[in-house]
Amino acid sequence: MSTAPMDWMVTRWQITELVETLLSPAACDVVQTWLGDRRFLDKQGDPAMLSLIETEKPAFQRLVQAANQYLEADDVLMELARLGLVEQLATGRVMLRRSTYGPGNAGPVDRRRSTLASRGMLGRRHTDINPGSDSPVKNREKSS
Image (cartoon, rainbow, N blue to C red; front, side, top):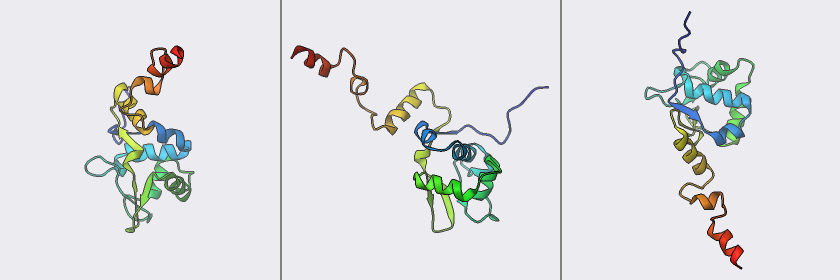
């Protein structure tokens, strides 16, 4: 019996490394479900704005239940809002901020660039990030 990948999972987006370290494992599961479950994506394959009203589709509470049926949607929403990862709109919807996720097919170079950008280091020289023995700063210190 072959095991085919689940039809409802997509890999266009992935949670950023920085966000993954900030979130609780439960909230991380919710965000990963938001990024990978077609029920919570818009027509373009981006994370959809979700209703805070349970009876409307797609609803934030249904997202949380899809990730983990034992979680409370209000607790997850509070954690995501506290970290600035979601924005609650006046229309009664919540949207996932773009800084929370990146391309799902990112290779090692792209992931490194995302990590450096999240740390404010994109565009800096390697020696600015990890000074080595060839660092001009260290060489000046040695000659003094």
